[in-house]
Amino acid sequence: MRNNSILITKGENVSKKLIFLIDFDITISKRDSTDTLLSVYQPELKADIRKKYRSGEITMKEYLQTGIESLNITKEEFLETLKLVGIDETFVDFVKSGIEFKIVSAGTKLNISGVLRNYGIDLNEDEIISNDIKFDENKITVSFPYLDKEQYYGVDKKEAVQKYQDEGYTVYFVGDGPSDYRAIEVADFSFVRKGTRAIKFCQENEIDFFEFENFDEILNYLSDLITDDVVNIQFGQPIPKKVLDMYRFDEDGEMEILNLLVPDYRNAVFKHHILDLKIHPETFVLEEVIVETFVD
Image 1 (cartoon, rainbow, N blue to C red):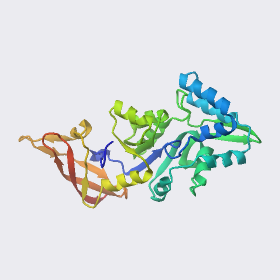
Image 2 (cartoon, helix red, strand yellow):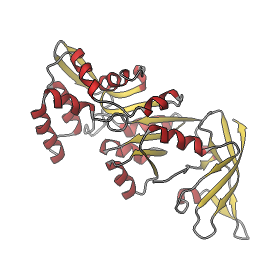
Image 3 (cartoon, rainbow, N blue to C red):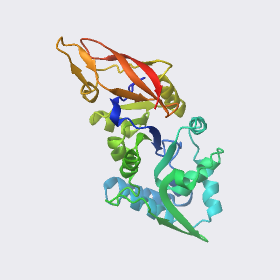
Image 4 (cartoon, rainbow, N blue to C red):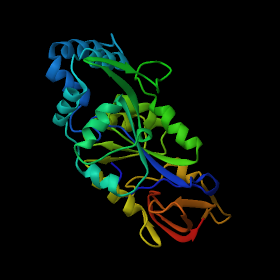
C-alpha cells in the first residue's frame, strides 16, 4: 500500500477535471447484490452457476443473466430483498463531498439504485454505467448496453475509463475484483479495497494503487495530496520511472524540473506549478514537492 502518494504528469497532459469510476459490489456494498438475491430465491441455482463460472464453463455475463432471469419475483420483492445487502456507509460521505463520480458495475442499475436509496442516495440514470433489467409481472429480462467486446464481463469498464480520459478527465478507479482488472490497468490511478483479489493483481503487474478500508480513507488521501502550498509525498519506495522520465539532469548532474503540474482535487480551476522537489539522493524516494497555486 502507498500512503500519501501522487501521480505527477507533464503540464500539457494534465487533465482539467477529475472523475472517479467506482465499482459497486463489494467495493461500495458489503455483500454482492446479485448473490444476495440468488441466495434468497434460487440457492441451488446459485451454487450450480457459481461452480460453472469458477471453472470457466460460463462467463460473468452469463452468470448474471442466468441468475437474474431465473428470479420469479416482482419488482417490489426484488427491491425489498436488496435491503439485505448493506453498504460501506462512509460512501455517503464520499457522495456528499461533491467529487464527480460514476458507478461502473457488471451487475444491474436496479441493484445499485435499489440498495443506495436505502441510504438516502438517489443517483441520476447517467451516474450509473451498468446493465438494464425489465420487469413484465414476475418475468425479468436483462439487457447489456455497455457490453464488452469479448461479451465476458457484461460491462466494459476499461472502455468507460478510456472514454472519460478522451474527454480530458483524470480518471481514478475504485474496485476490488477480476471485472475491474482491465479498468485498473488503464486508469490514471486506482484505489483497491483491502483484502480483495485486485490487491494481488496490482502487485503482480506493478500497478500503483492505494489500499483502502472505507471511503473516508479515500477522502483523506485526496485532502493529504494538497495542503496549502506544499504537497507532501511519501512513496516509501523509489520514484516510479514514469516520474523520473519527466526530469532531466543538467551539466553538474543536478536534476532539473520540467514543466510539471499537479491538479487541485478540491477545485479543478486551480493548478499547482511545481517549484522544487526534495528527492533522497541515494534511494530516489520522493520526499516533498513545493508548489505555487494559480488559476488555470
